[in-house]
Length: 143
Image (cartoon, rainbow, N blue to C red; front, side, top):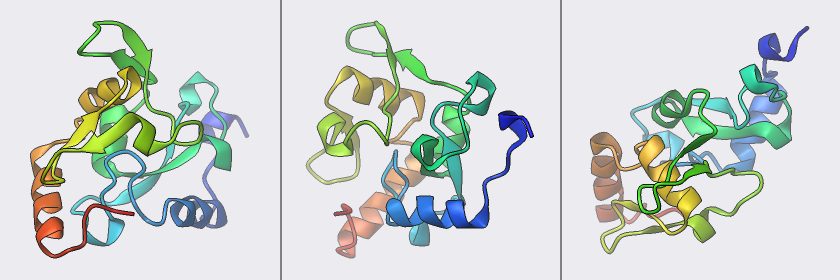
């Protein structure tokens, strides 16, 4: 079967979700409280030759997955240069992102982080509201 049609097995899906501890690997929302469903996301899109393998898969809420779609790069709003988006298998979230003072907004610390914040709209209204509620309940930010 060609890679663009290969389905993610239930076992691989569980592996990806468990590895991410059931948090979106982009916006860091917890699956159990998310208004969006979660899915396995191909970091390098299948249309670009990305494989359906653990090394190329991320756990993603529908909001981030839908905004990323087949994107692999975006313009860094600070430098105006096209850069690769954050790659959860090759980069550490904490090296490219941080939280604002009340933990409701993701701040891009690097060109990859800033481009990803903008491309995936990591601070969309529903996610910020969820973070606010989870912070007040002592359930955010994630470890």
